[in-house]
Amino acid sequence: AQKVTQAQTEISVVEKEDVTLDCVYETRDTTYYLFWYKQPPSGELVFLIRRNSFDEQNEISGRYSWNFQKSTSSFNFTITASQVVDSAVYFCALSEAQDSNYQLIWGAGTKLIIKP
Amino acid sequence: DAGVTQSPTHLIKTRGQQVTLRCSPISGHKSVSWYQQVLGQGPQFIFQYYEKEERGRGNFPDRFSARQFPNYSSELNVNALLLGDSALYLCASSREGQGRTEAFFGQGTRLTVV
Image 1 (cartoon, helix red, strand yellow):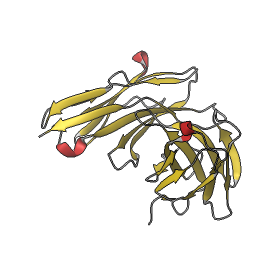
Image 2 (tube, helix red, strand yellow):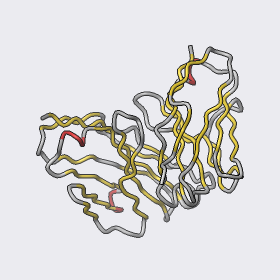
Image 3 (tube, one colour):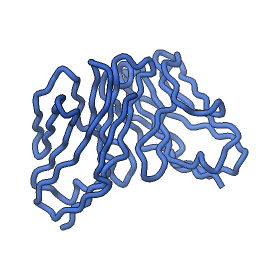
Image 4 (cartoon, one colour):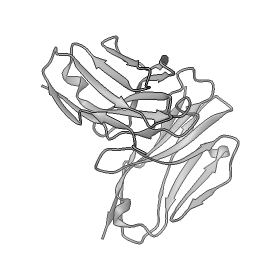
């Protein structure tokens, strides 16, 4: 069965530090999609990135970078030079191509606190 | 372009009552999905609709139902409310089936059942 694990419940760092959020997934499907979303206190989920299982290239977008490793079933997210505005709950999610429900399976989220 | 809009933003209901939540997707998006998010947890999939047809259903009781209209807006109905239905209900829209393309979420409806 598909599953997403975000083992870090809460992370607290001082502004300008780098921080990595871990995501480990389980799937039997060979074609799947991985996502990261940010949920600020306002509650709205903000899309950050989508990656399909055939694209293992790491991605960098400004201060954000993602490390996808199929060998360890991980899709980790790093924020470089963190800022107070990065404080939010971050979710990793998985969707399988063969899932007839087309649903997203979500991790429990990691609460990130950036202290000034 | 307007994002995904949900109404109402907050709602308080009594046990046993019925509630209807509404969602308007981004223009051009044909897929709408509903999720329930209990405090401190990740969202749980309830329904997905695409082109006005139900495409997927999560593990929720029959008290939960939904529909999608010709203009692609959607309603989520919950009957016989229980205290455990208190949660943030999120609507997401996407161009195609959820999970194949990025989904964009509304701000949610905070439902409190007392």
